[in-house]
Image 1 (cartoon, rainbow over the protein chains, first blue to last red):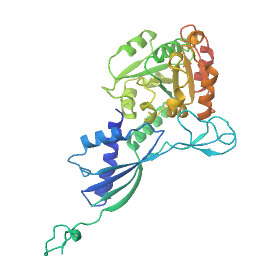
Image 2 (image 1 turned 135 degrees about the horizontal axis):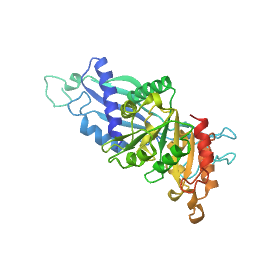
Image 3 (image 1 turned 90 degrees about the vertical axis):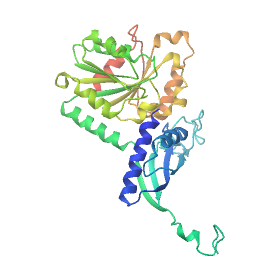
Image 4 (image 1 turned 45 degrees about the vertical axis):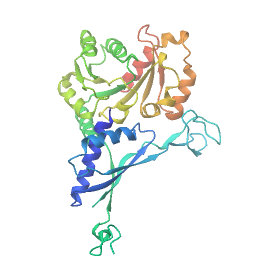
Length: 113
Length: 232
């Protein structure tokens, strides 16, 4: 459900940049979404299809660039990708780590005509 | 000859201008972040702390709020913002404590956002308050993404929910300043491994204290109340 608020914000950002570039036709929207951010592609697409008609982004293709979670081990500094049920460092076997990537959530670029 | 339709008169391909890429790199939910910053400044002006309390439905948020208000009655002037999809039930539970309370109904929304809390703040007697407890909509996922302008973020997890929740909902446990394990009086009856849970939380968030308590029996409440006082 929170993807509605999120999709409205995406549309606001896209409209702002498209208008700034003097165009009224956005063909592609590139989003970067971390796997830890809790935002679901299908849900964003669903709301986009619902609210984009009649805007500069009508008919634009959404591209979802998912960013995997990366940890840096608190103990030994090793960087690794945790899996859903395994957060153990492959080098020193400590549990968890500082989240280096996976929380991203931004509009990376748009393509316009 | 035209590649598109085969006619001799024009070339369709040349009529299509290739798309131009415009770099944006703009954080989504920036408008909410700005509203949250306004709330934060507003609260700082009034020297009020605000805790954003997040947990699943039924984790015991309202019960802990009431126990906290009662226990700190002589020390802190506490106000409450209740967030729910619908109904006034939680606000009505707070009323007997005497704490000023405002109920926000999100009308289907799964989280509070900063503009809603801004509205809520205007309904509270800010000049009289030291601390505002915001009970977010029951949900371990969405509330994490929406900054409210709080000074501290609190996660509650009740013993019946299970000790594996950090694996399933890492974002909330990574983001908060403290994790309260509620309904700890049920520990003898359920397979909740408190030590394993604490290790998982600290794997993501080494600085967040994990405080087991029972608002019903009062066990562990002193540790929580001490944390509240030190952080407000």
